[in-house]
Structures are given as structure tokens and as C-alpha cells.
Length: 202
Image: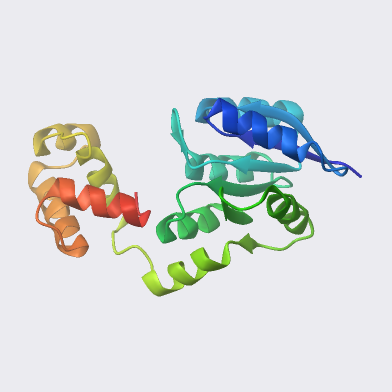
């Protein structure tokens, strides 16, 4: 039985190389390739893949958000995150969203092929070093609302801008930003954004 694979990767050369290598496997068939978050659901509903290999940082959105959409629309489809960004916070969020695997791009392609086979067999496959890092790092200290406010602040928006966008009072926005700064051990909101991104919390 051949496993149908959808590849989601924004770098064209990487996407083509990955497809070519996986197509060499007798039991795997790449049925579609896309390069942005907006293209994932239309492609997935059209080709009905068994497995989606999904990058995290995509034009038009996050692969972590797309994971939840895929799991809701195609519950029989397994999602494997394949990313350069091996951050503990990303791993937790990916698994919470329903991903069945999380591997980093610098691993050999035969390991990726084996990860595809293992998730189809019902296993959860996680890069061992990343799993250890996630356990030692602990969960994100940010509440969902603090995370939302910090994401809104990432482009340099003022408290007033964020207040209007998120329908919160300016004082509430400032309180959330202060809490984010305190929890990340930083001096200002932009440092808090940087630390939270590096940790995979945003």
C-alpha cells in the first residue's frame, strides 16, 4: 500500500528536493506540494493525503495553526512537523494542536521516511534531543491573552493600537505587556517578543 504525502514548505528548492527523495521510497508517493499556509487546506481536501509534512514558519500563517485545521478537517490524516526551528515551545504547541511527529530538517531523509511510516502505525515521533529540551524547559509561562497581546506588539504597535485591535482597554494591554516582560526576564516588550519567539512560545 502506498502512503500519500503532501509537502508544505516555503523554500522551493528544499520542497523539490524533499519530494524527489521521498519519491524514491517504494511505499511513499508525494501527491502535492505547496508553499504557503493558505494553500494547505485546499490542497489537502483535494488530494486527501495520508500524511502532511508541514513546516512551521510559512507565508500567510503558522504551520502550528494549520495543524489544528488539518486535524479538524481530515482526522485520518497524520501531521508531521518538519522544521529548521527545533524550539521546545514549538514542540509543545505542535503536539497540543494534534501533530503526530516533530522532526528537524537536518536529519537524513531515510529518518524522515521512517517517521512517516511510524506515525501511520500509530506512534508519535519526536526528535529525541528536542524532546529532552522541551521537558527541561517546561511549558510556556504566558497566558493565551498575554501571548495574543505580545504577538500584536511585535510590529512595534502602541498600546493604543493594540487596544483597538484586540478590543481591550489600554491599561489592560499595558498590564499584559508588563507581565510578559516580567515572565520573560527582559527589559522591554521587544526583548520579550524576541525571547518568546526564540523559546517557541509565539
